[in-house]
Image 1 (tube, helix red, strand yellow):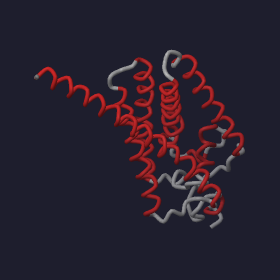
Image 2 (cartoon, rainbow, N blue to C red; image 1 turned 90 degrees about the vertical axis):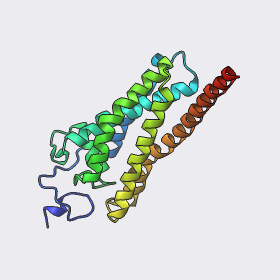
Image 3 (cartoon, rainbow, N blue to C red; image 1 turned 60 degrees about the horizontal axis):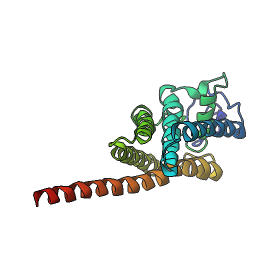
Image 4 (cartoon, helix red, strand yellow; image 1 turned 180 degrees about the horizontal axis):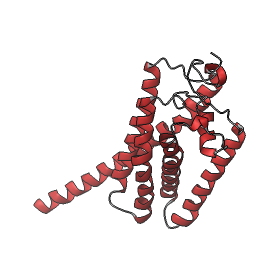
Length: 220
């Protein structure tokens, strides 16, 4: 029982042999993450999106931010099954030790979580960076690509939340971590992909209608 209770996660009987307590404070982890995110957004906004509209710049910033989050943070989780044993104060390990307070399935290596995060890191992450390129160069496939990624993110979130619900939805240390980490941190990957999906769907339909109208005129 002592080994099971040595970690701060719920359920308390979760087996994490060799667990090393987190060494960074929540504020320090957030400061590094926000600082790195601000750097990425600033770089994209001022250098890559100089000749684009404000909306395109915002979209490029989002895709760069979410793409690197998928590849770096989530990629580390997928390929580091024993991050909870890390004793080097590795920042990425500290992130997941902290986040597991909101969802202990990460520390416990839940198969559904690993599957969702694996697909997200390996496929959606690079696709997000491709979306940055597509928007910056005005590629014809930009809207289709953004729609596909957004639908993938929405599907991943659905699987993530539904599997937690079916398994009892009891993986957070307390209500603060539940609402700030589990709900709050993931909520952005529901709201923003929904908005992007709606916009891209309209753009694709407008383009298709335009082509159809031109074809009808040629036939006449």
